Image 1 (cartoon, rainbow, N blue to C red):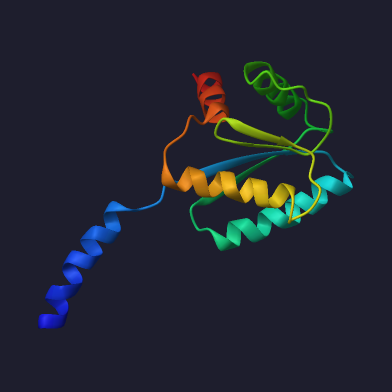
Image 2 (image 1 turned 90 degrees about the horizontal axis):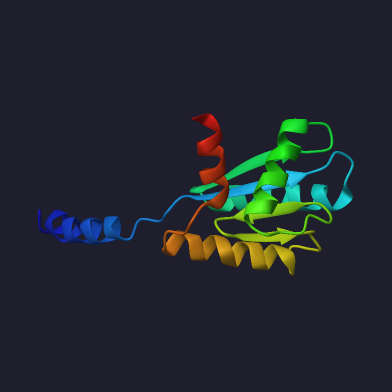
Length: 131
């Protein structure tokens, strides 16, 4: 019985530090080798962190996704010059070099998002479109 009583405060404290969900918005083009590298990286990230959600948008064949990216680019004052484009909260990455460079930077922003709530710019734009 004593063991059970000791665990109750531990679980209560742990629940206070629950992690925020982090949305990743991944804009990519069909046939893009850098996009494929990042897609593979993001699949690993999604397996590693249970509260990461990947939102994938192919833009070379989908006009709606391309228009969404243009709107996001305008809102975030982002020069859309190449693919892939990855947006997490109010930060973005253009291009993907490797798991050790761009991948590490992306993972750092994810970890930051777990700790504190940030402005999810893309979700704000998508929510307005649904209204």
